Image 1 (tube, rainbow, N blue to C red):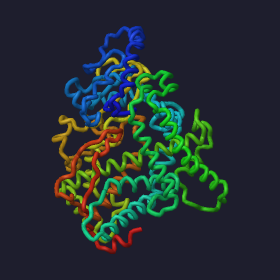
Image 2: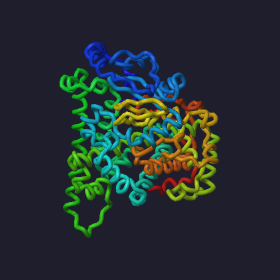
Image 3: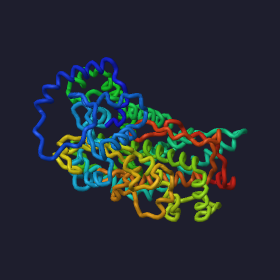
Image 4: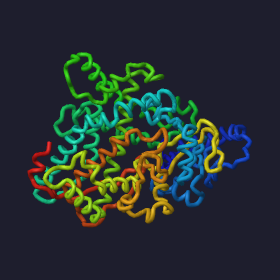
Length: 530
């Protein structure tokens, strides 16, 4: 599950262990090789070693994201190829036809998730939705989230929470600008991350996260622990390549210890929030009204034991909380960050978007949810950003439960599927001038991001596509809309912002967006924000 684990150099001890494994598993590898069927296997990239596969292949000093490296390999080996990590075969696809075949005809076959150590030790024994294997538990939790937690009706009821949070942060941002004697540089990346994290914990647990807010210290601790989890999830773990009990018991790398410590911090805060909600729901009279957050909804719907088969109710809820924080507090701000970077670097596009808002909304009030449907150019900007910088350049991997066929190739059972969305969405056969930021391309097409147009699947496709699409899109349209309606932007050097891509599941921008911001609306509009 660690998309860029291949970029991390093994320590001498780890290299020695891997070398021993090469000998230890060679006999097993030979004996377990089955006679091939008539269909060929996909091409495998060169440079693999017996048993350990391509563990060392990507340790070449190239710090680009794995999706970029795999894109280069697709140019050489084709849109369907494989490589091996330890005992596991990885299938990489990046063409319309292969993607469609995997997420339609073979969707059920590829519905499982690969096992990973952090899913066991931090992910509540794989109770987190995006790590859970395909089955009754996964179906029940996904249905609950889609119908009750992230449904359009639930999001509509909490619309005022989103609007209030965004506008309050816009007001604070303007105050920082006005209180500065000279034009100060604002770290927009940090602002986006804190705002999005504060909003999701407010919607999930009713907790405030802002300067001087109630529970601010506890939420900040949760945020820091969450960051530790993101780092741990990227570490190379021997067990993930060679899943034998030895690497859990001895813990050569110390990862199991770190995972247990991180989980303890995450779980203690999540359990405290859950206990608070249980107590409140027990003490509150039926006639007494209060604003229900996502934990309240999950508590009311998860009394049925069938919903959390194999897991306790509390663990299922805490795992769902963590999964929602992962989606909303990591992918959403990164994507908005890329969107603002592209707009600041393309001032003609920014001006066109501002003119649309000025025409359709005006300068006497702030943009609202109801305005989004009329702001077609803003929608096109979000789509174009999703095309160039998908939230997960390599979709979360799948694993097939039985042998299948993809693009005429035989895919053995247990193969791990990586869809290279970045390569797919930069295909010059589908997208003219694919590297160019051009929102206008979406003004003359009805291609959308719901997973049915297989040349454009930023949120995935099939039964394991992202359940939080509606939430993510609402946040991106509203946040970008407020930011470009309320301010103009320039870089301190008057040079374009860099586009250096970081490693990680969500490919963050390496360097923060640091810009000089100036208000473009009447002063009283910022003062009235709440």
